[in-house]
Image 1 (cartoon, rainbow, N blue to C red):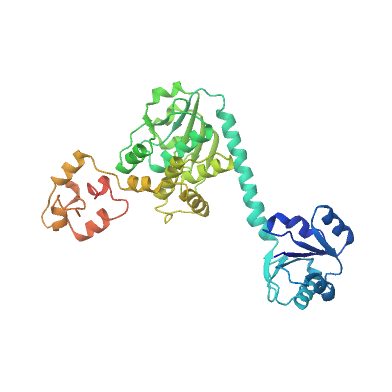
Image 2 (cartoon, rainbow, N blue to C red):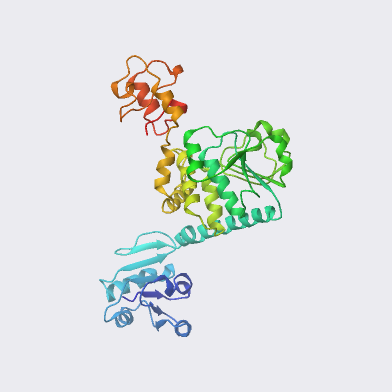
Length: 388
């Protein structure tokens, strides 16, 4: 069906184009012959007449048309819509106006919605693109770049480091992902193994081997080695700033639930392809830092999560979230018993075996089991082992 656009002036010509409508190109009803001629030269169908006249509209709409879109100055809006309802009472009617005041038997879109839904997101993306280009330019001529995370990197840090390496177009050799500590949690170890992410342990003495230093999901003041840094090149983080950050480029957004969300915005703004492997890492980074968007999640986190969800490998994600225990861990699990534990726990061979607490955890109780061993974050660190 051919939409009908009624615009006494140039407004609708600029706001709505033929590309916005699938199928037939719209019919423009305008009040000036000069505007009709301009639209016709562009290849559009247009009729000129008095758009507040029901007779003119009835003639233009005869034979059945599609939805009618009205964009008119506020002084003419009521008369134009009244004429449309008189000429085509059954036609779907959409009104574009300065505010969101309702119009009887019509849908209303305030012109401010174009700014909120189209201009503002585009402006934010342009700003993010400029940030990405500045960041890339800063690291462009560096032979080796250090991408540094916290001492025991979590999924958000690991994913963000991988995203930064991708944004910079670097290899493992020219931009290693490093930590002054080591990865300890089984889920994080599984993440690196399953997604084939290499994280290197270094010490402060190795800093001289790099031309640039970038920090993700961490700030210099968070590390004991802070005194060795001086001014770093880049800090991208979502944690609140504790001390002034000495960095040539810094992007710290405490309102965000995860640094991975910030990195998704960089990648999308720079039109960098997000592979399934990277999407899986970033999705897990957001999921773990926001507890599945239940803690500290924002609109930006939700948008990034939704975008990544369709790209990620969910089979790999399940394996990461429920890592297999090593033989040593299983032996340690099977050797722990305590009085009063239920049969499905006290029997290591049971297929429904859950987990056993550390020796320091005290006697077993139903409350302990519920709060420590069945929570989504239960790991060796919280209950000693985990069901597989």
